[in-house]
Image 1: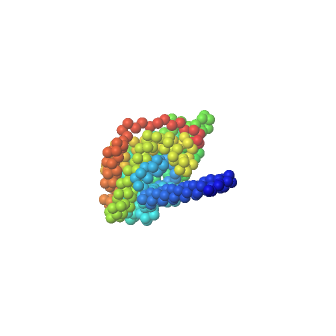
Image 2 (image 1 turned 180 degrees about the vertical axis):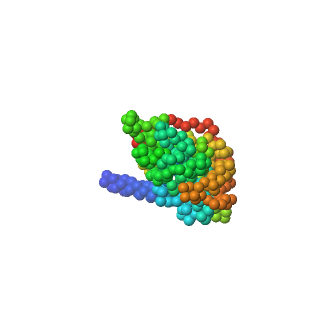
Image 3 (image 1 turned 60 degrees about the vertical axis):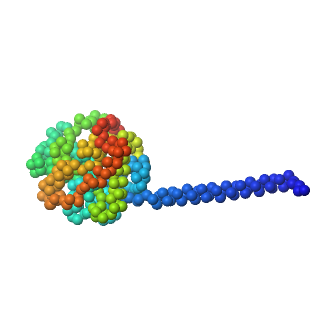
Length: 386
């Protein structure tokens, strides 16, 4: 007979418990290793993609950040890195040099790069409308490009000025002074510029966030007059997704990735359309330093550039709009007499092949790719955009 003492019983219990604990640890470690292994395999299965923006992190690019945050890229099998610019990076050059997989840039700027040898292709025209304005004070008498004669006209340069020059050319205005404008409205508010360049989604909002010294209140839209190049007829195509032309021709994997990237990006823009506040919050979380009301304003104004789509779906490149941009790029001269391009761009400069496939898949899945019922929201700007 074996007699077990109370102390011995405790020892047995402890031994059993220890054995179970060790078994549990081994099981937990194995589970953790399996989970880690599965995560590694999942990450390894995703195709890495780099996207070069043409400016800083802001709601101008809300759709791409939303696609990343909401998991649309991951669901498409992509691991997307979004790379901001601060003006020191030329997106189409980074793409042409093989530094990134895709880039966001304005069409007229890229047409000039293509003529200089950049092998890039517009695969999705995200912005259907231009956001560029020339802004003057309401009492200035400036309401159209013809009124810019004899005035000081602000321009950022760097390829952002071509709609302005197209308008000046069209109006036959040659007597004006171009003032190099910073990316703000300070010189305009100080009276150093008669008509300043502004984007609807950024610099124009800066004016409405500033205090009118005569009233002590924020400026109101009626304090300004706007020259809208869409209305003048000299608007050029702006934000588009550009891909590597050579890789599109020869790399089937890149072709498939391009469709997947466009599709997921469009899902991001649909999300931004239907969830403006959430999209603005996503961009802020991604590192934007803009104030909350300014960020929401920007999201709303950018949505207006996209929706509703009249070209058959977001991203479709309208041949008429493309041809108009090319014609102005060929015929518009700046203050030195130079034009953007001197010859027609190659056929590889744009294609609807990949965006058509992406739109077809989204439509089949029940997504609204035209936004015919889109209605902008009302945004109240706070002082300083806070």
